[in-house]
Image (cartoon, rainbow, N blue to C red; front, side):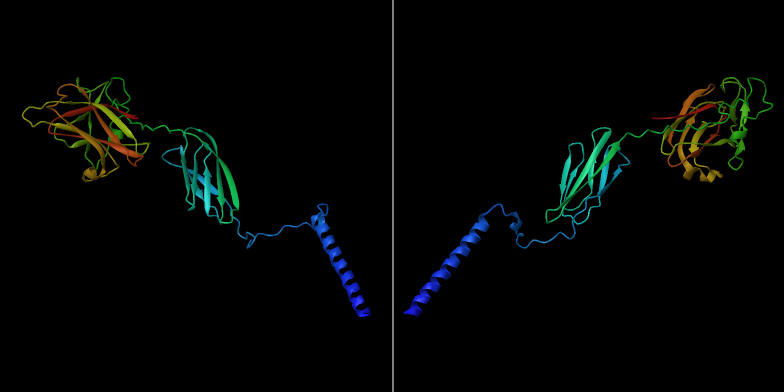
Length: 304
């Protein structure tokens, strides 16, 4: 009987101890004032982002349109990209393509690229550009020496200056003659080409702007020789050459006039429009055929 009594007493004490422990644990867990025991549980299967994305790009202006810019995407470790071009235009991309935008006007714009990876981590990079219309360089207009064949003289016979000098090229033909005959020149003198067609004028002039249109103007006339076929006078713009055989391959523009069209017995106007191509230097080349011809008053101008 004593043993049974002891067992009941022991069980009673043990039960009280367990109840007291449960009560203490409950009090501790529910007590918000015990901050030192607070902690966060990690999300399931979470891991540290060891290769976070980095957003970066470089900007370049389009050579043909100053309002259009290309942005080379140089970001790393990202899977999606958001472009903000700073003018209200945006673009979302999942392939890492370069950005491109055409701006409405001159101004300063801030471009922002946000690069994000599969873990939702983002990187942002911004850069400013200044959109400015470039200045258009002035088209160069070369100088023609002795364009009026006046020998630097106001009316007397040529003595000190020979206006044929800038027009000489012995490998292409004999040098032009100079005339002061009425109706065949402007000013004091003009260039004369005998009917045999064995004389030419050739002058290399420089300082052309490449790929620009120019207009070469001049005055010309024919003598109207009797019992000859209709004569002609031709004016060409050519690349530098040393032989008449090179004319076909070196010509960038040419025009011919015949005596049955105009210019018989009096000076009339002629012109040649040409493109300088890739050249900075070209030559004026003129020659005649079958009739005595005259040419004078060369001028050159750039066309818009």
